[in-house]
Amino acid sequence: MTKLDSSTMKNAAVLVAGSWGTALASVLARNGYHVKLWTRSTEQAENINLSHENSKFLPGVQLPELIHATTDLKDALQDAELALFVAPSGAMREVAKQAAPFLSDKTLVVHATKGFETDTLKRMTTVISEELGRPMEQLVVLSGPSHAEEVILKQPTTVVVASTDLKAAEQAQDALMNTHFRVYTNPDVVGVEVAGAIKNIIALGAGLTDGLQFGDNAKAALLTRGLAEISRLGTAMGANPLTFAGLAGVGDLVVTCTSKHSRNWRAGYMLADGTPLDDVLTRMGMVVEGVRTTRAAYSLAKEYDVEMPITFQLYEVLFANKAPRTAVEHLMGRLRTHEIEELG
Image (cartoon, rainbow, N blue to C red; front, side, top):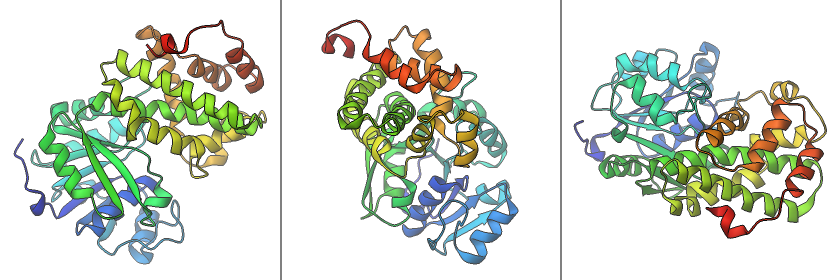
C-alpha cells in the first residue's frame, strides 16, 4: 500500500449517513476535506444537500457545506483518499463488498463501528479485510467515548485510532484531529475493537438497572465488573490489557453507561419494565448494537472459555424472556470469589 502524505488527503468518503457517520463527516469537513456522505436513501441525500441538515438522525444541526450526500457508491469513493466505514455491524460486510470495486489501493480505510458480525463472530477489521481483499494491517479502527450528538456540536471529544501500521494510524489521526476532536494512536486493534463492542452490552445492563431504580451503588458495580468482563474476553483474544484502562475501554464504557445520548442505555431502560425486545427496537428506530453484540459475546465467551456473567444474564433477558429483576438476583447470588482472581 502506498502511503499518503496527510496534506494531500483532501477528498474523503463516509459510509453511511447515520448519526455517527454524519458527525465524523462534519469533523473531516471542518478539517478542509471535501466529503461524500453515502446513503441508500434518495430522500435523505436530498435533505442533506438542500438543507445542510441530517434531519433524520441529527435534527436542527447545520452541516458544513463541504459535505455532499450521494446515493452513488462509485461517486462517493472514486476520488477518495480516505474512506471511513460507519455502517452498522450487521450491514458492514455488504457495504464493504459493494464498495470494493470502487476503492483505490491507495485509499486509507478507517472504520468506526462497534460490534461483531453475529454469524461469524468476526471483528469488523476482519470483515472489511475479507471483502476489500487487503491485509488487516492496512486498516484503522476509530473508537472511544464519542456521542455523535456532542461531536456534531464541536463539544470537546477525545478518541483513539488503532492500527498495527503506525503510519496508517497517524494518517487517520492527522485527518481527524482538531481543537474539538483530539485523537490518540494505539497499536492494539483487537483490544480497541473488543472494548468498543462489549461496552454496549454493559450499557444495556446500566439502563436496565436504572430502569429498575437500583441506584448508584448497583451501577458502579455493574461498570466495574463489566470492565472485568471486557478485559477477560479481550485478553483471551490477544489484546493488550492496558487498552482497557484507556479511551476505548473505561472511557467509552463510562460515557455509554451514563449518558442520555446512549441508545444502548435507553434500550436497557425500556427493557426494565418488561417491554418486549422487538417493541423496544421498534420504538428506538435506530440500530442498538448491544443487542447483536450480546448474542455474539455469549458465543465468544464459550469459544474462549471466558466467564462473563453479566453478558450471560443479559442474554437470558434479551433472548430467553428472563425477568430483568431475576437476572440481577442471579448475578448477586453467584458463588463467592476473589475480585483479583476474576480479573484474570
